[in-house]
Picture 1 (cartoon, rainbow over the protein chains, first blue to last red):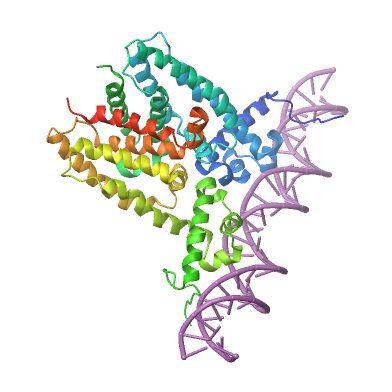
Picture 2 (tube, chains in turn yellow, cyan, brown, orange; picture 1 turned 180 degrees about the vertical axis):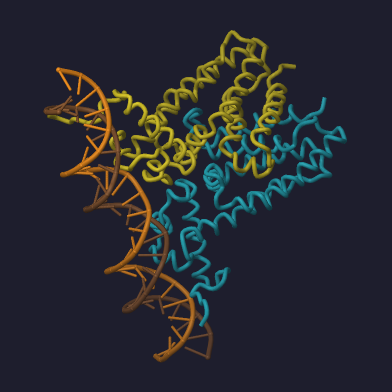
Length: 211
Length: 211
DNA sequence: TGTGCTCTTGACCAAATGGTCAAACTTGAG
DNA sequence: CTCAAGTTTGACCATTTGGTCAAGAGCACA
């Protein structure tokens, strides 16, 4: 007896379960990233996934559970580019490579970027624990690396935290504010990302190269 | 006969009307900027305004009308800092002053910033006409000014559009992603805005000063 | 082929939500 | 003070929405 669930613990057991949970998360990413959590409905997600609403709720116990699963899955990939900054690399090039990686993610995974943006703009109600935990630790760690580089004279003296904020904001802008960027530039496809890459390389190269 | 409204055309006539429309817009700014359009309810706004729900709908015909009124009112102030860039000023200082003005607005009017952010992240469904019209015209105009400065050698050669995007993103980040910034920096009050101002001044000064 | 488990869904429910309305209460000009 | 216009709200309504349920369909394995 006790609390038994038809859908076992966490990992999908059967092929059907694996396929359907993936389909649902994919559809939910589409919908949540476009309308935010409260702006999205189970019907929308069900339709996007090609499943019935009760079927969604067979695989996930609730709407928030779908959202939580999505964010848990994505938070990892989202931090990867920052993790890859290595203390023993060439400082300016390490950071410029980070800028490019973040811009690449904004181009390749704009839905993921907007999902987080939606969350954080609204005060990060569902992910504040992860921001204060995982994210803050990682940022603190990399800020220390940057301070080390500055101390060694290989990097111009700047505030490492605000540097990281400016890298995040400038790169994610091309995903989160895509609608505005496209309205102003009227680009064909993703052509403007090349210009953005060149611009940001110049911007941060001038900022970081010591005199 | 014809279509008569208890609430006259646009401008409030009586003192009570003026006071209450202001109260409602103030409350709506609070609520919409925190939860987005779909995430906000009339009950929330009514409660925040200290009025009954039918009373809200006496002053505004619908929820979207409140939202639209807010955005119309704010769009103007939001573009002001950009308008103030003057072609016959000293280029680098004009642009750095613009950066500071935008940062100041992010500090003083974070709710307004988040209201727009919420809209644009979700594809700007309600303000795309203004973005493609007013905003784009103004940006195009200022981009031409910047190109003129570059041609005269008073400014380092950079893409004016991406420059403007990077100014918007870096400054608005402190309002839109306030929750994240505070979680990472744990500042007392708005202390971190001083550091941000210094950092952004350095960043853009290095970018813009010709060699 | 039979049997038990997994999977799917139409019908349904309670709560929330945007909006209406008629009746009651205020206000202010004459 | 009066009365018409402006203002306020309790009660109500239709729709949307997250979620439930029982019954049926599909699948795998002996």
